[in-house]
Length: 485
Image 1 (spheres, rainbow, N blue to C red):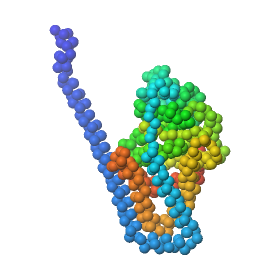
Image 2 (cartoon, rainbow, N blue to C red):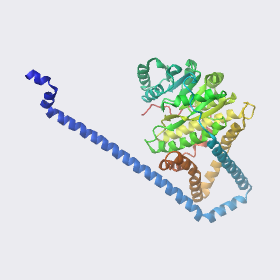
Image 3 (cartoon, rainbow, N blue to C red):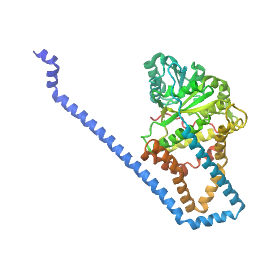
Image 4 (cartoon, one colour):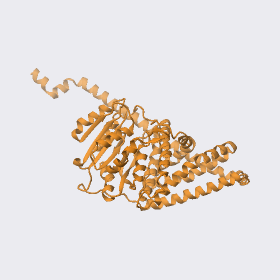
C-alpha cells in the first residue's frame, strides 16, 4: 500500500504539496515581478520618447517664430552681403544649388510614383542562388541570420548557403557550428585563420559559390521568407541587370531613440531614394545588409575589387558601394526591390552612429572619384543621363561641403541668433517631406522622429562630411568591435 501510494502521481502531489505550492507561488511571484519591470521600462521609454518629440517640435516652432521677429536683422545681414563681391558670388551659388536641389527632388518624386518592384517569378524560373554571410564578432545574431535564410521559401535544391567567420574573437564560430548541426548539408561554414576584413571574407565566399546569383547578407540581419525570391527575380526579367539592392529596415527600432530616428531615415533612403534611382537603372549602392549580384558580373570585376586601393592604401571599407560602382561601369543596370525586405541592427549609441557615418562618408568620396572616371563616357548602351544626374547631385554635395561649412562657422560667430533661428526653420521645412512620406506609408507618430533626426544630424553630426572628406584616405572599419548584444 505504501509503495502504491508512492508510485501514485496524484498522491505524491498531495504528499509534497507543502513544497510544491510555495515553489509555484515563488515562480508566479517572480514572473509578475519581471512583467512589472518590463511594463515600467516600456512606460519610461514611452514617456521619454514623447518628451523628445515634444521638445523637438517646440524647438523647431520656437526657432521658426523667431525668424519673424528678427526680420530687420536678416534684412541688414543680407544687405551687407550684397555690398561685397564674395557675398554676391556666394548668394548666386546658393540660389543655383538650391534651385538644382529642388528640381532634383521634384524629378525624384515623379520617378518614385512610376516605380514598381518586379514580382517574383515561378520556382522553375528562379536561378540557382548562393547566399554569403560574412561574420565578425556577431555572436548569436549570426545564428538568427542563418536560420532566417534557411526558412526562406526559395527552392532548397537551388539554394547554397555559405557562412564565413572572419577571425572572430567571440563565440561567433560556436553559433555557426550550431547552425550547421541544425541545417546539415544546406549550410557550409568556413573560418578565416585571422581577421582580414569583410571584403576578404566575401572574396572567399564568391570563389566558393556555385550559384548563378550571389546574395550577400550581413550577419546582424534577418530576412523575410519571400525576400530571396523577390530579390533575385529581376535577374530573370531584366537581361542586363547586374545587381539588385534590397530594402533595408531597422531591426532594433524599439530599443532606443537613435534606432527610431534611423528607422524613419532608412525608409526615406531606400523606399524613396532608391526607388527613384532604380527607375534610372542606376542604384548607386547595393547595401551590405542585403544585395544580389549576377555571378559573371562579379567575376568580371573581382580582381580589381579585391585589390582596390585609394591613395596607395588597400580599400577595406565601402566594399558594397565599390562592387556596385564596378558593375555599373560594365554597362549593366542596378535595380532596387522594395519587396525584398531585410531587418538589420543599427547603432544605439552616438559613438557607433558617427563611426558608421564616417565610414559611409569616406566611401562616398572614394567612389564618386571612381565614378567620375567613367560616368561621362559611353559606358552602356541604355540611357546614361540618369546615372550622370545622380553623380552630379552627389558630386555637388561633396564640392560644396567646405564652402558651406566655413560659411556656417562664420554665421555662428557673427550672428548666432540668426543662424539658430534660420536653421531651425530650414529643418522644419525640409524635414516635413520625410515626415509626410513615412506617415502616409506607416505611422504618423513614428514619422515625427524625422524632425528629431534632422536636429541631431544638423547640430550633432554636421562635422561628419568635412571630416570624412579630409580623412578619405584613412583605412579602418571603425565599428568592428566585440558584439555587446
